[in-house]
Length: 95
Image (cartoon, rainbow, N blue to C red):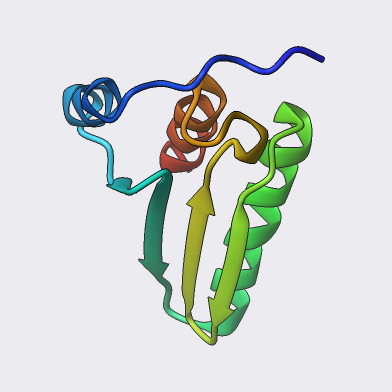
């Protein structure tokens, strides 16, 4: 599978802003933190993210701290952000 080309930071920032995305660019990663009403709700969200990630064959780093989930996406083999990251971020944001 051929990976997409890396996207420059300005293009990423513009794409996030135009979509009203809750994601934030931090260097070569997109990050998102969501807080839920319970641990069970947080884990249900993680399971939704896992299904989206498997379908896209592109997997975020996930941290769970009781009712808070933090996600980070980057295309490591491209050395930064690509269309894969923007697409996965948009799919997760829609949840």
